[in-house]
Image (tube, rainbow, N blue to C red; front, side, top):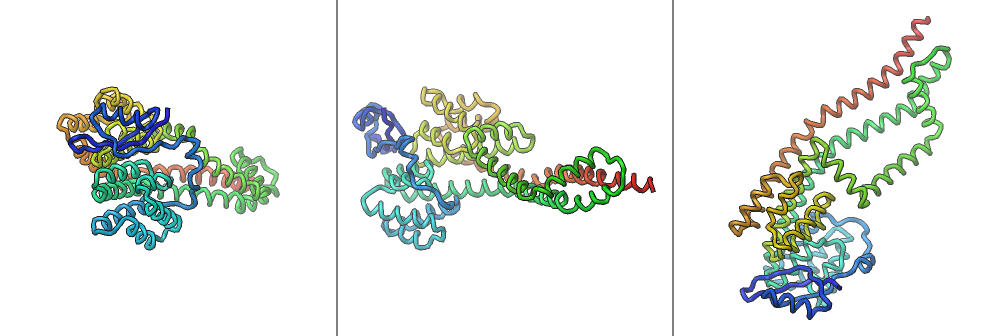
Length: 402
C-alpha cells in the first residue's frame, strides 16, 4: 500500500502531522476520523525509485544558509510581505549560487499555487525535519512562529557541529603535516643518505634497510605513489559515506575512549533539540521519532530511534523505550524524558536538556586539544625516534670502522 504524508486537526484545533499507509486518501481520512482528527492536507510520499530522480546536488548549501533563510523568511512574513515576494527578496540577497537557484524555483512553484512545504520537499537541500515543521506551520496558520522555531533549531545545530568539527581540526592538521614531512623525507632526504651507506661495505640494521627499501621505491615510483595515496583517500571517503562504512564508523567511535563520550552527548543533544522543535510545531510523537531516526547520522542511534518509534506506536512510553538502550542514552536523558511525560511538558524539558548537553560538549571540545596533544606528541616522538635511530646507528658503525 502507498504511504501518505498528512496534516490533520481535531475539534480543539490541535494540529497533527505524520505518515500513514492506506489504499487511497479516503482510507487515510477515515482512519484519522476514527482518532478524532479531520484531514486538512495530504499527498502521497515518493517511492525510493522516484526519489532517485531528484535534482542533482552540485556544490553545498550549509546549515547556516538554511538557518538564515528560515530566519529572514519568518521576519518578512510577520512584517506583511507575501510569500512569493519574500522568497524573491531572499533569493536576490543570497550569495550561494546553488541556493539562489533553489530559492528562485521555490518562488515559481509557490506562485503556481503549491504550498511551501510541498515545494521544499522537491529539493534535497531541505531535510525532512524542515519540510515537516513548515507543513504543520502552514496548516496551523502559525508559519511565522514555526519558521522562528526552525531557525533556532538550525542555529543550535550549526553551533553544535561547528564545535565538534573545530575540535578535530587541530589533530587533523598535525597528522597531515607529519605525513607530508614523512613523505618528503623518504623521497628526497633518505636517498642522499643511502648513497653514503652504499659506498661503505657494512651490514645495516633491519630498521635502516626497511626505510631505505621504502624510500627507494617511493623515489623511483613517485607518480604511482601519488596516485595510490589519492586512490586510498578517495576509497576511504566513499567507504565512510556508504551504509556499511557508516556502520563500521559508528561501531568504532562508540568504543573510542575520548570520542565515545562526545558522540553520546552530541546525539542526545540533537535528539532532545529536534524532538522538542518537532513536537512544539505540532508533529506527532511517533512521526517525530521517525524523522529523528532518519536525521541522525550515527547508525547506532538511527537504528535505536527506529525501534523506539515502533515501541511508542504500540503504546509504550518514550522513557521506557529509551531505557532499552542504556549504552546510547544516559540515565539523565531517560529521567528527564520521564519527568516531561509525567508533567506534560516534554518539549520544554528536552529543550533544557539539549542546552545542558550542548554546554558540556562545549567544555569537552575546549579541553580536547589538551587531551589529544600529549598523544600526538608521543606518536610524533616515536616516528622521529625510529627514523633518527635507523639513520644514526649506521653512522656510528662507520665511525667505529674508521
